[in-house]
Length: 605
Image 1 (cartoon, rainbow, N blue to C red):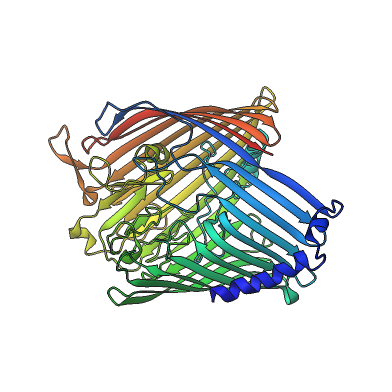
Image 2: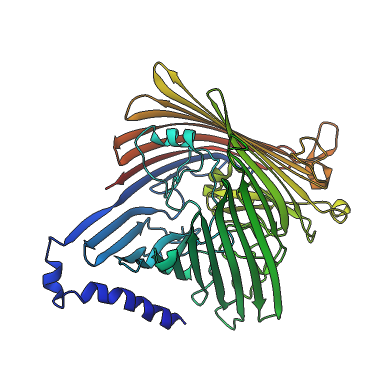
């Protein structure tokens, strides 16, 4: 099958580049028809950290690095050779910081770190064609197939390697006007390395896309995915159908075969100004080692009523994801299939590199869904005078209760600790913390006396407030992002704010931006996280003043200052300082405090 696909792709592209002129040397020297360009970016990251206390240890080295503690690209170089008659050839090169180990600074999510890809493109009367091979690229097929989560409500204070560069003040205005603008190359897309073929504007408005290769979550050199999608436009509607196949062996030595297949279809349309976006998928996985084979389904639908009925944007989303539906290459969290979780020891000698995603009942943010769950999300945007309000409310319930393990993310303090304890599981003073790329989560075991009697319910409420005014005739922005989670044994339309909730997590973030002039903006940040549990979430090991053990009660604070300086329209210097602390007063030694400074120079050319 693979050879047939490669041969077909060669037939599409080879004639267009060579049939017009046998003498390729004289053809490519015809500068009237050839355009050669070089573009890309350079990124330098300076990093300094001081850690005054880490889980009771006050002796920690001061860190100076020329990277951000992760394997991030320093240079991206795109070389494009374009012909008006024959399409284009593009070569992309990524260069990374010289990281070689975990304790030795090696990145765990190994992809093709050579970072070289080749892209061919051709426009014809039959359609437009593009072929990309190798390197590091980003693809999105659908929510349940190949994708990553789209986080639209988040602070702009912290940057990452893939964040774009805008002139000073442009990004703040973008976020003020629209929360879900594309801010980075990987936004909502899965990082991949392999062969990607895409054909658009085909006869009768069909399109086709194929990918063969790897994501960071493929296990070994003999583990690959193959996926294709065919779609069709019909007036204001778009239909697609696709298949994703992931297969390999569970260990390099004496390994057994495993397979995971996803069959999915999507629909996006407009009925009398009612907008609908939906997907339905079937998952089947099997393991030769134990004869296990299971099938699951997943479905979601989002409806936006006509503006003639409701004057402001309002979105209703419903979803159902069965316990046996699993796909680690999608944006879904796998909370119920142990065979595909890095938090279990299911594979024979090989771990699952799923990005250290949590397992069990996960208190996930609204933009991330989990299997073994059904729920409803409601989102809206409206204005109150000059104040822009973005409001979201979600509630969900597990389908079957098969574990007392629950997890929650530390949204405000997560980046800082993940740089210190990189890619660690079972870390922290109680051994219940797991760090992943730019974050960490905490595992909690619910008391069996309650867990055996319930199906867990989850709630999340999001409040995003955005305000723009003038100070001394300078643009001044204030952004607030509040996120409120609760986990309880009963259904609730909104998060539970009392001790009736087994766990309550509250996150508050404020961004302040003052545009000094066309080149300089000053930035401030404050974040707080409050983690509270009742007696069923486990008691601490520190005696209170009343000589009793109490449930978790954690408080974290982050204070940040910085500035953005625009060197040119496509280059900028970003400086950030953050002072971070977290204290769980009812658990011994669960405390850390320190600061970090980052200085980033990013130049597009």
